Image (cartoon, rainbow, N blue to C red; front, side):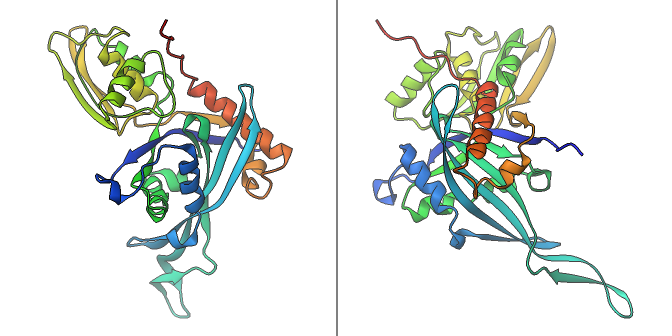
Length: 315
């Protein structure tokens, strides 16, 4: 029987500063800080118990591993983690000698569903193995345990995974309006990638020491859609995943008023013949087969989330 393909969803790793005062901890700015947080997250003391009416789950991060892989662009560092959800107890029907009753059963050892996560450090992109059992909701993102890890290291910054939308999804929606009258989005400052279309906006945010920027642009006569102006730069930054939540666009397509909400679903890549490699990645991190598998995933990430066009150098 042919091996089923693996699917990976693509996210942007955003650094979010939560504290307001220096004594609350250091800020995360270097990739070395990011790696420290990822490594510490696999400590069992950060395991989280979540109870629901039907079951008790334990969320855990394990198997931190660092890969050094060769791609067509350059050698790349990739950090790997495994997120697991174990079923500790479960409510259901049980058979006794005389009847069938509702009871909460304790599972020992508990069974677990897992998600393998690859952090593409050079680009602050994340490939998350898709598992429908765990990813029907966004609970897995809030239980990734990176906040507890960051705080244990006395950082006031935390790491957030934000969907990188499917290819040009936000920009396609932006361009689809004959008259765009409103654009709403919350941006997070890009790090580390620059793009010729977003360079000026990024410089303004850096100069103003702005880490988050909520924009609500309006003009009943229509916002500019030129690539040289602020509305397009905002959409391009959101397209790259430097945002929080969805992008909302209002305007007219022809004579019809339209509202588009976009940017919440991540791009997804399909990988063939990698199941065995992914399952054993932590144990076989140094083998050439595993490095080749990771390199193949990075190549596809680069294809879906294309490398930014470098900003023009000032003469």
